[in-house]
Image (tube, one colour):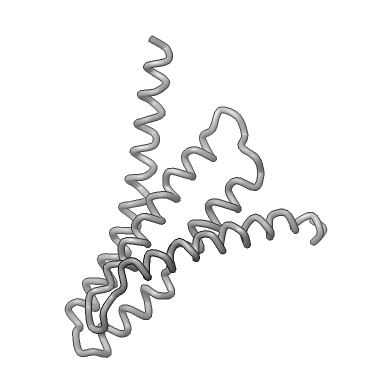
Length: 140
């Protein structure tokens, strides 16, 4: 595909990413993590972003009518990608380990990965359940 044909997608990802990163920054301002504390803000943001991605993928991939082609790049890659911060997750893990707290560091490392995957699964399952209930109610 010609590079110019990708400009709308790049623009959608950039705008979504800017909004997602701004939302994450706002969360960090509202709920700062003190030095040597467990990084609850990053943990919560990553979990919420993964759940939102699960919801989004069901709504986009299983929609009765095809959504606008820029919805997934804007919301998925852009907003959710900018909102979640797995780079900070790795830095937080390193910080906990370097501070001589291997138990919390390793729990955070494993706990975030497991929780993020569970959040995607929960987002998918909940969205499918709501859609099935809505369809059943409409058919009745």
